[in-house]
Image (cartoon, rainbow, N blue to C red):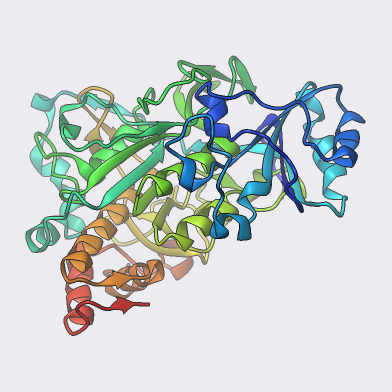
Amino acid sequence: MHRPSLITGRVLVKLCDCNLNAPAHLDVVSGAARPLGRTGQNSIDRAIHGHVSAMRVRRVFHAASTLAYEGERAQGYDTIERNLGLDRIVALDISKPERAQDVANDLTQRDDVDWAMAEPMSLAPMDIAPVRGFSARDLEPEIVREPFNRVGAFEALDMESGDASIPVAVVDTGVSLSHPEFRHRIMAGVDTVDLGLGPIGSGATLVGDSDTPDALASDETGHGSHVAGIIAANGDFMPPGIGGRSSLIPVRALAAARSSDGRIVGIGGTMDIDAAVKAAVDMGARVLNLSFGTSEAELPEGAPPVHADTTEYAASRGAVLVAAMGNSGQSERYFPAALDHVIAVGAIQPNGRRASFSTMGHHIALSAPGENIISAGLKGYRSSTGTSHAAPFVTGTVALMMARADRMGISLAPRVYRDILIETATPAHPSARPDEVGAGLLNAANALSKLDTMLQHRKGQSYE
């Protein structure tokens, strides 16, 4: 069943040929360049002008080789980028946003267009239970430690302390940059949000920074900070992040919005998210946590799966992607979790059964705790529930495994990490189906042990 989609009013287009000089989104959002008024392909421009009088054109993706050169980021695409067609994906801001679907429908029929879609939005899934805030003195250590204990986090950290040379990107609503739990952990980040101002449909309204050019990935919802704490907290008043000493790249791709019921949630356009993921990879992120998504049922009719080009690029660069399954409690495809090259993580109860809200599907790899997880907030600490908070347990474990492999002089293909996590998961309750919980509960200590067994005779070699 197709549900109404939440779209930005932009149109995303993948052209078959690249004969344009449009700037990259990162240069536009930073104020270093202005969009063009045309694509430069006359027949396509005429088709668009059949619906709207004006448009602004930018490339969604920058070139990796010129990431550091502000104003020049649409130059120097390499072979991988060109082969994937990343230089040919453009975003159109049109003068009549309500005509976005009509423009996309017409462009989709053309032989010189690979695909086109009215740009959908992704959500950081709403917390299932009300968010509770805590000060450091209010935390109960046994309750805070319980989910970490359940996945063998402390045993894993005794085995492997992690390494600051393993950057982990949290692509989310940003991170609370001044939070004590992240002191000396945060690397330079990026903010790609460019959603404009005001209402965005479904009763939601953008609040805070939704279109201001800046480079600070500062969190305004608490969602990204909570995720980051599970991975990379110092361990001052909560358990140390399961990623050990790994570094943290804060990436703000989702803005803050007030929902119709008054809650503050994270929401982002596909362009902002795709540009953010690629920027994180090009900045050196080796593991990326993606606790957001779009249901297949909410995509505009005829649209391809979102983020497919981006995740293909990340995998080609050797990055490992971990994503939340979603909180619908239904069986459905939720992107990016349902894409190839992504480790999809659901939420599991202490009894080994699926958490009632956790989205189901045969693409799920494994599960982790996701109910009443206490981690960092904007200030202090907060309890949150959802698959958003299960995924980072797996992300941090991958970072530990990478540190271990690096220490042994081993290069692992991204899929090997997924295989090890699945093989070493703690079996779920006998009544839990594989499409509900995947291979079972994450076991970080088992994963490291399996890695040691696999690689102890492979020093200095790659492992594909």
